[in-house]
Image 1 (tube, rainbow, N blue to C red):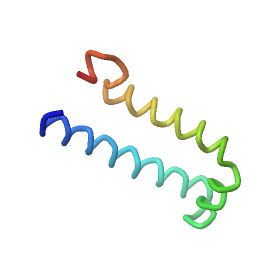
Image 2 (cartoon, rainbow, N blue to C red; image 1 turned 180 degrees about the vertical axis):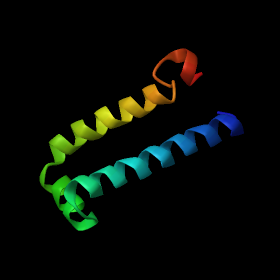
Image 3 (cartoon, rainbow, N blue to C red; image 1 turned 60 degrees about the vertical axis):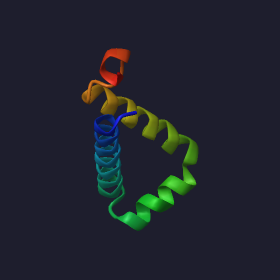
Image 4 (cartoon, rainbow, N blue to C red; image 1 turned 120 degrees about the vertical axis):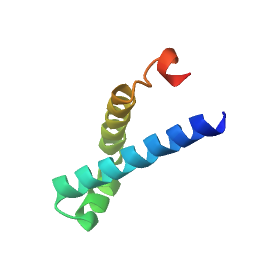
Length: 69
């Protein structure tokens, strides 16, 4: 992976992480409650996170080989 691709991927990952955390905190009304919910509902959280990541890849046009390459 060249430097430009790495930079784009790092940006995407950081952006997706920040947005996911912000949404979880908002839904759970705080960081502590969000952490507790993620720990208690690990399987549901993984499915939710998977759907979120898929949507972010689609938004950044990385859901196919043309966009990812």
